[in-house]
Image 1 (cartoon, rainbow, N blue to C red):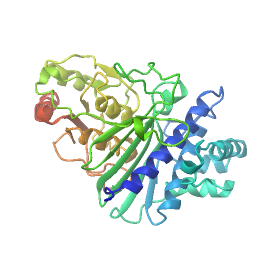
Image 2: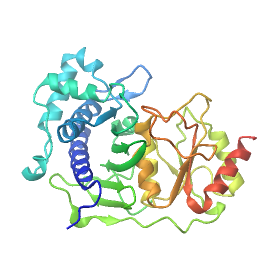
Image 3: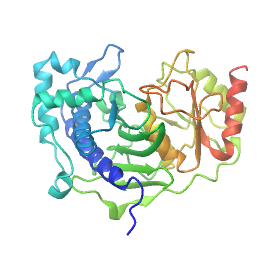
Image 4: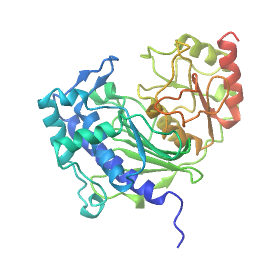
Length: 355
C-alpha cells in the first residue's frame, strides 16, 4: 500500500492540534484565563503559552531537525512564577483520552523544558529553505477570551511552499453562516486539514483519537463566477486596515456591504470560506504601506482555501510568498477570492484605491 505524501506529518499535526484545542477548551471554563496585554497591545493568555508548548513538544520530538516559527516567547513566564505554574499545569495535564493517540505526542517533563520549547518557536530561523513549521497557538485571543471563534493553527512550509495545514476550531458550529456567537457548546468543534494537491477535509474533534471515520472532503468553490456573487468576510473592529476602501470594493462589485460575515480571527476567515459559512472572499488593504502580516496568521488557512479553488494574492496580484520568515515580507495586503472572480475583485481593489 502506497503512503500518500506527508501522511506522517498530517497525522501528527492533527493529533497535536486536537490536543492543544482540548487544552484551550479546558481554559474556557476558567473565570481567570491568565490574560494580560503584550507590548503591541494584543492580548495573550496562558492558553497561548501552554498550547504553543504542547504543539512544539509534539513536533520537535517527531521531527527534531525541522525549524519552528511560533507567535509567542517565554519572557512573561520567566518573570512571573505564578503564570508559569498555571501554564505548566495546563500543558502537562491535558492529554488525549486514547493512550495510543497520546503516545504519539511528547509532553514537557519540566518547567525548564516547557520554557525552552516555547522559545524554539521564537528563535530566528537559520534559513528560509527546508522544512519550517509555523504555528499560532490561539489565533483570535481577544475572541477566545469572550468564548467566541478562534483557531489553533499549524502549518508545514517546505522550501517556501505550504505543504500541510491543520486548523482546530473548538467553537465552530456547522450548518449556517459562521458567527462569533454561534458556538459549539455540546462538542469539541471541527478540525480542518489540507495537504497540497490532496484537497481539504473536515472532521469533528473529540477528546481521544482522531475521528477519521467522520472525515469528509470539502467541495471546490466553483459556483462563484460573477462579482455580485461575492460575499465578504471582514471585521468591523479592524484597526490596521482600510474598511472605507473595502466598502468601495464591494460597491464596485455590486455585492453586499457591510460584510456578510464578521470575524476577528484572520485564520477563521479562511475557515468560514472553506466551510461555506456565508462568505467566499476577503480583501485586506492596510492603513500603513509598511504593514506586513505575520506568517502564522495566514499559513495553513491559505492552503485550506487554495485546495478548494480559491486564489490568494497580494494587492498587486502576486502570489503570497511563505518563505520569507516570520512575516509575509513580500506581500502588501491580501486579495482572497474564488479563481473565477479573483481578477474582477483585484481590479475592484485597484479602482477603490484610486490607482
